[in-house]
Length: 390
Image (cartoon, rainbow, N blue to C red):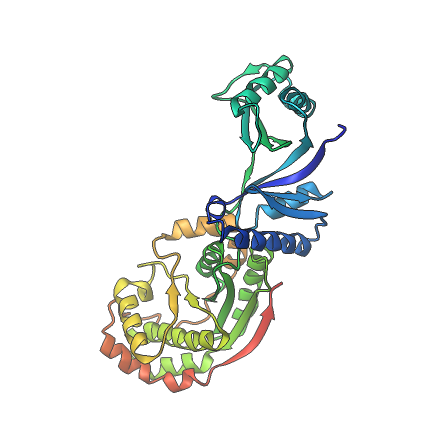
């Protein structure tokens, strides 16, 4: 088809498009940079990437591969392979759409969905009627309510795009527009989902893994982290830090009251992460805690933890994106984002206080006393590895 080119067309997430005229260009520049990084990291060549009127355009010969990549970039609402061309009049526009879409509607019920911006002399309804009249002879008729095929026509100035509808992207904000956060990352089902949800809100996330008993936990967490980073974390170079926490867990097992052991371990992990975050310039900590899921995540224990930590050191903002989700919802999301299989292979190596009563509503004063028994050993813990994930 002469004068018609194929490209990948993406809809920019609505909350990006609705930003102020002062803010939106910065978000769009970051989105373009992230898309370029995503394409390059996945070995997809491209000629140009740009945002025009809330649409992101990617010129590439690897259309299907590029489409698959764009559907994993935060800030993309949806994407599709589209046909693009310039037109002279409404009749010319309809004739060109006929060239593209006649085969799509052949023998099938169809509907035309038209949108228009910066085009004068006709309305979106005019486009739908004119294109529908052109395509009807090829089809089994028009069905606006339950069509077998939808023909989407987007008119933007003197250029038009024709496609069969968008595949859903992740939405959210482009990674990097909302600062940096450090995720407490076991590699199990929950923490990768928490990292994903935080990245979806425009945050660059790096990961902090604690070796609590067996160094093999690092290998398993690293496998999950690489899946997360390769599929979703574009626009920067995410890292995973490994902390040897075995001395701390040994002291907890030996000296801390059994019913407080798990809560004290959680507090020690917060303390180390807070100090590390402050040194490295992270603005928040992220955890995979879901309210009431396990004993350390009861409202009483989380409240006691935050009260004790607030008295002992400056704790950065703690984000808990899974707080209101149940396990089934978290598992479904892990499957969707692709981390479930790797996370399911992560084993539980640390079994502090697995027997006997476990406190579910810690007394802040008692927690502070038990935590004091291990604080000097928290300072002795070291980052033993720093892994680039991309």
